[in-house]
Structure formats: C-alpha cells, structure tokens
Length: 344
Image (cartoon, rainbow, N blue to C red; front, side, top):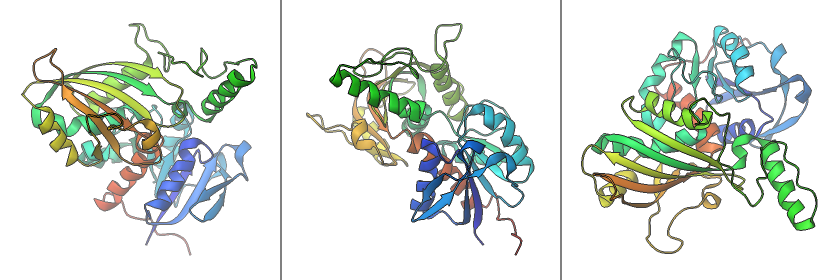
C-alpha cells in the first residue's frame, strides 16, 4: 500500500520542486495533494504528467495523510504543523520555525539520518537552511576523517532563496538596466542586478545576520556542537544555485588528495576539481542537479591542518525540496512509519 502525501505551499518555488522530485524519484505515493492558501484555490500545478488543482490548507482534513511536506513559511508552519502532526501525519517542514526546537530532529540524510527516529515527540522533522544543507554534506565525511575545529564560510546565494518575487525583481531590474528604466527595490534593500548584497535575513545584536547565525547553530545541531563556525552570507545576482567558499581547520592532518578521495566516495557529493580554467563547477551547471559539487580543494597554509574548497548546489533541490523528500524516504526505508489504511 502506498502513502498519501500532502504538499503545503504547492504554488511556490519549493513546493513545485517538491512535486517534481516526488515524481522523479518515483516516491511510493498512492495520492498526492497540493495545498496552499485560499487565494490559490483552483490553481493548477504539475505532478509528473498529471495536473493537480490546489486545495485550501485551512479546510483540509489530514486524518488519512501520512506525510506532509510543508513549504509555506515560518508563521504558517508554526500554526499548522502541530495540528497536522496531531492528526497523525509526519510534517517535514522547510521553514526555520522548528529547526532549533530540541524535540524536533533537524535532518540532512547524508549527515544524520539516525536522528530521524526522534520525530515522534511532535510528528515534525525540520529541513535545514539551504546554505547549511549543502555545507554539512561536504563537511560530514571530512569531520569523520580528521575532526573539524573551525569553519570560515562566505556564501554567494542566489535570489531564488528569497522566493519568486526576488527572482522577478532580479529579472525586472536587469531588464531596466538595458532599457534605461527606473530600478525598483521591493524585495531587497539595495539593487540586486549587477550587484551583490552582504545581507540575508535580519540583523542581530552582535552584527551577524540571522542567515549567518542559522549556519552556525544548525551545523552544531546536526554535525557537532564543538565545531566553531563563522559565516558571511551574500546575495548575488544568480537565479538558482548557492555557492560557498569554505576554509576549515582540522584537529588532525588531512591532505587535499585525501580530502578529494573522501569526498568522491561520500554520499551526495560530486568532486569536479581540475586545476585549470573551467575545471570547477558554477551555480549555472549545478541548477537542476541533486549533488553538492565540490571544487578547488587545496591546502590552507594559514592554519595548521587547514583546507579550503568551493562548493555549489541547487538551493531549491538539495537546499530544500530534495532534502525534504529524502527525509520522507528515510522514514519509509527505515520503517519508521507505515501507511494509514485509507477508507474505501
């Protein structure tokens, strides 16, 4: 018997990608339901070669739903995830609402799949921040080998991480530059076309932004609380795909060649590292792909046992939709859940 899956936020960038990935990976679903706010009722979204009509979240009965993929923002998740969990569905939430809740597992399957068994306290599992997800996929196998002490990361994050309106703003501003029209900032505090903005999410008292704090806190929760991490998160005029420049200090020696071999054999990682022009991956090539691509692995001679590398991933996939579906697959493959019997 297959599973019944609800996708909340089905009209958004990530929600649509969730539907695509459920179909691509042949997820064992007998029924998939697309849900969103009342204003989206009747909107059609694609699920493989089928078309689903969006239904209203607030009127939906979750009694026979097995898994709910939630991508409707933090405030919606705060209100609805406990209700959906109480109805017996496991919620896999893409927002930041539950990530640091001690009773909610924060999961990247390649990193800490075993933690998924803790979902039963609230019937909620959290997806990490998009920039954290690709980072920990690369850090985990290296940490297992040589024990990471400290990470310094600068991100180059695409506008799709801020939603469809942000993508539209980049497009309209780019067009305005060429047509000599007025550039309007709505989604971003400064123009994004032909520019970079060192500011993602709100500023905190210590001068870091919330996005930078998320990377630190989530890495500690999923990988190791002893790891020290500092981040500078930057929005760049790219539509899809986050990039990161990463410097790591290890407790134990590790060479670039050893790191390449480890990462080549690590789940979710693909090493493209030819030390020549074009011998690395950019967000353009990573768009639409599942892997975290790692390039430019080299010694960081400024610290003892230091390495530096470049990593790129599709933030809508591994950073959000793919990771959520992979978590659902963990629940099924490890027999942590079973499909409810549906009424005839």
